[in-house]
Length: 212
Ligand SMILES: C[S@@+](CC[C@H](N)C(=O)[O-])C[C@H]1O[C@@H](n2cnc3c(N)ncnc32)[C@H](O)[C@@H]1O
Image (tube, rainbow, N blue to C red; front, side, top):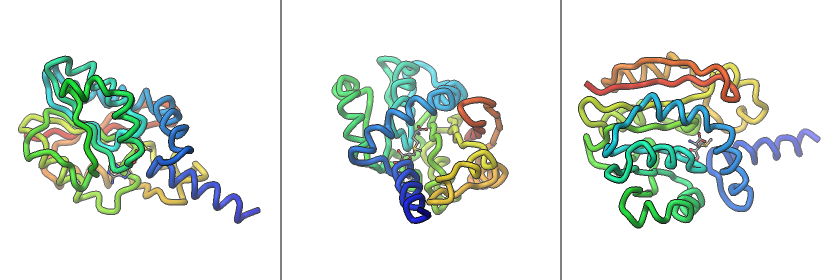
């Protein structure tokens, strides 16, 4: 029985860190529904203006791309960056019009290798992604690199204590104290404000990191 449970939880954690295949299609929909409030709050915190150049890094099911496209409007550009080929393919299908009009640039990448030039983004969001990173300081340095002066990166994470109670998190998630994430962003030269979201569906923390 333990073997079956371990395999199931390993599969769930693996899909959340790299949605793929037939199961990945369902995971993308579940992510969009379950994380919509946290992602919408991250977009609100980033507060991109019309015509801004922004990114969602590790966009998964893509609801963040939709929200960012609406915020930056016809003159803005959204970079959708993802390491999962299946999530990239899904976004190409769902957002074909925005891609064709040059409003959405989809690319293979990770938080430690963001495929955009230095100081090119007004804002970036990344929600429920840093659990899958080995090197958090490198990711924070990379976020600082891609922001313009005055730009903002919003890192959204589930509350570590609530996350630790979920049965699948021991099977591949790295859960870090909020203070560790704040310290890593600060060490990268960013000024961090913290907000907590009580309800979506577990408490989330938004770390709003600004570049001087
Ligand atoms: C749990 S899903 C979250 C998706 C979406 N941001 C959300 O909140 O619903 C994690 C996503 O992060 C992506 N990911 C995994 N490792 C990553 C990394 N090193 N850098 C950026 N994204 C990564 C996965 O492919 C997956 O789409």
